[in-house]
Amino acid sequence: MTEEFDVVIVGAGSAGCALAGRLTEDPTLRVLLLEAGGSDKLLEVQIPAGLYKVWRTRHDWNYTTDEQPGLGGRKLFWPRGKLLGGSSSINAMIYIRGARSDYDEWAELTGDPSWSYDQVLPVFTRMEDNARGADEWHGVGGPLRVEDLRSVHPWTTAVVESAAATGYPRNDDFNGATQEGVGRYQVTQKRGRRWSSADAYLHPAVDRPNLTVRTGALTTRVLVKNGRATGVEYRCGGRLHTARASREVVLSGGAVNSPQLLMLSGIGPADHLREVGVDVVHDLPGVGGGLQDHPLVPVVWHVRSGKSLTHGDSPSGYARWFGARRGPLTSNLAEAGLFTRSSPELAEPDLQLHFLPVKFWKQAEVDPDVDAFTAAVVLVDVHSRGSVRLRSADPTWAPAIDAGYLTDDRDLEALVSGVEQAREIAGAAPLSDVLAEEWSPGGTVHGRDGLRRSVRETLESLYHPGSSCRMGTDDSAVVDSRLRVRGIEGLRVVDASVMPTLVRGNTNAPTIMIAERAADLILGRLPAASATAAG
Image (cartoon, rainbow, N blue to C red):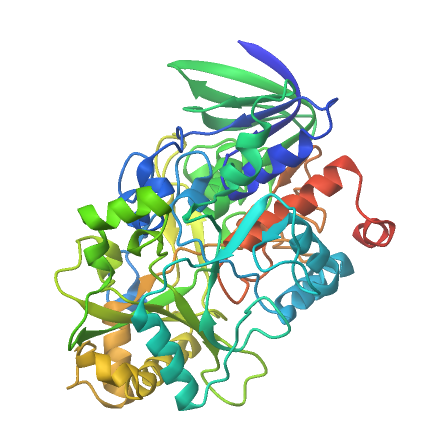
């Protein structure tokens, strides 16, 4: 069975939904959106605090890294959304764009000033519908709803007060004039329920006659003829289908699936492709290389009194959520944050601390057993690099993920400093009045050597993989600044894998911004200055 479209998009995640929604605003453009997973109409998706209940289910790709030498050989769990909305349907909904310097660095690395902060800021404001209203940094009327949390936990208020008392500046808007400081997060929610990329972009567009959405459709390869992508093959309903694309094929599978699909299609490092039995279509050495992720180290305390968010999963919690969309189930778990520096000599923050009024341990593999408070120390300026590689030419096999955690000693030292700062904040009132003994690393662990060992033993992922098909101008770059795969016509990658470097902060909003820019590029509606710069 062969069908004809103008654009075929592979992956209905954060980027794919946004791209499909924007492209089909042009009624003349026929778009096919393919998603390997299924519907997002799940209560566990809609209820913000239920996010971890979707992990390790059929709605999750449920990836596991290779053994990590820097972590004593441990393998880490990587949840990735396998449903409409992708990881925006299972994430913690934190709305963070990253620092100005991140995008200015992108502009430098790509040789394209249209990726600079001043150029992407209007894209962020266009896509946003911020409950606080419009100003220099924010917009209203866009598809992506951004709100303040509706029912903030009292421990969240306490930790912000304690961090301020310790000397960290207050910051009521991490996406405003400066990123540094401590404050509450804004979230991608609408009246107390999750507002994913599917909610924002796809569902309002699904009835457009020029949009076709196929779920349960696993794309197996990109078809290439005479150096041009002409369509894709995909499996759906037990059959192999072909979808032709007269204009473009766009991969939006994310930092794991997009490089995997390129390599399955014969586009990637030639020697590696031959090793796994894939015919080489185009030798592109950078595919799957340069992988980055934000590592997380949980610091956990028992509490003297009060109830953590674990009690929200109760009849009264559900009654409040169903009745008024309020209460503990509206929480995104990580309600407040801090951007700070591991060393005062640094020009920009390299650490992000998430504060959770609940015990978050071993990536929520088991439900919290006690009331506890967690400070999750995250490195957001990562020096270590990893890779995505094929294990087999069979597209149903999960790829080999080497996250490269702590392969650069600078990452370890920065995380140790972050743990020390978390402890300092915990020792200040009013949070110190809430917290009891430290459970992990534990009060007996002192000195940097002890903390180094603890970091290696407890480090987890914050689920922000990127840069495995990065933009750039060097020989290892996979796409150019217009997101076109180098050496193949009619093929783009549009997702977090194209980030030249990871942003300082959560990656969902930047990924949607990349999709918004991709729609502008494909539709030819970039502002004149940006179009000229993008060449």
